[in-house]
Length: 236
Length: 191
Image (cartoon, rainbow over all chains, first blue to last red; front, side):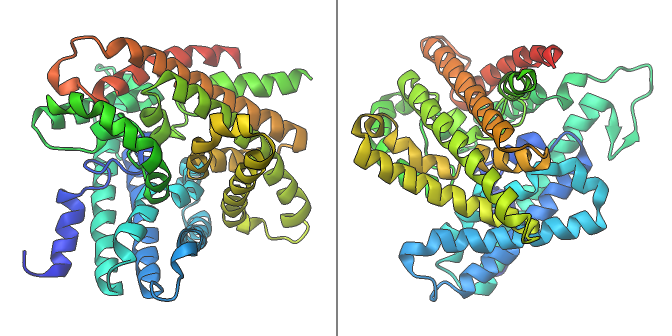
């Protein structure tokens, strides 16, 4: 993987897939994947915000003073989210009402601030934009696949088209909130079984930093927590 | 009065913020490792969400609506919440060190808790007035606290159990959350 731009995209989709490996942005991952269309819509909106926020934050990285960078990032991200929200309300009203409150909540999606802090604030704008594309595609793929699975199991349809015959009753639980937790539990268990390291296991051990700001504030709290839990982790 | 009690029951139990709306999942999974920390975080969340709901409601009704700037609500709310948490932290540090000691380290964590922004935005969407916003904020935060304390209790027990290897760590916690979410779905009969 010599080309650094392609490497960014590969990294986002496979190596550091934000939803499956880094376990960032859990709220939308669990909440909106009740259907394939909602998952895809949420993924694409998040990707649009992520690419632009990475690009803008990276371009301004030398202009933003270190002490106030997080409030500055939040203002940039919130403005972009408002733009996406207004565009969606105008052109895709059905999707807008289906996603509802989760569109403005893209602002607090850990992926966006996390990439701003971890990547865009240290790299050139074009590379950062490609990082956003890679992460965005990775997130969209994960959300769409989760949506397809939950919609198929819970409603027997694929992007709204009925695929299961009426004689087979779908398992309605999969499109309810408990179904979301169940699907995620099984996905992480499968990844554990296949020894693919995910951040989920660190996450449940204490605030390992769901996002940039969070990990900073948790350092003091997490330090002793990781000490105590160190022994248990060893046996894995 | 009945409608206010109804708002609390709905926000705390029927539409539980974590188990049916998936807001604040990060801290729900992370902090629930310890019972004491969960209870303290719950206290801090009740405190911050109740105040933030009131402030967001006042700002929306008396600043954003008269100026016709409602489309700026996301930006305004997130900044106000961040500033508010800072101010609450400074105020507590100076005026009541006891509460600060108990809740202090959790206060900054709450800024990025999507539940706070989520409640403020939902209140506006539902067109609640100031009193209703305070009750809905309080109810939501109580629901969060109930969920995280219950999960902490369950996790205290499963820690000692023989869990199948792939399910150790996150999956078993998520399975507990699944069962809790199923139990909470029973409350939907109340509304």
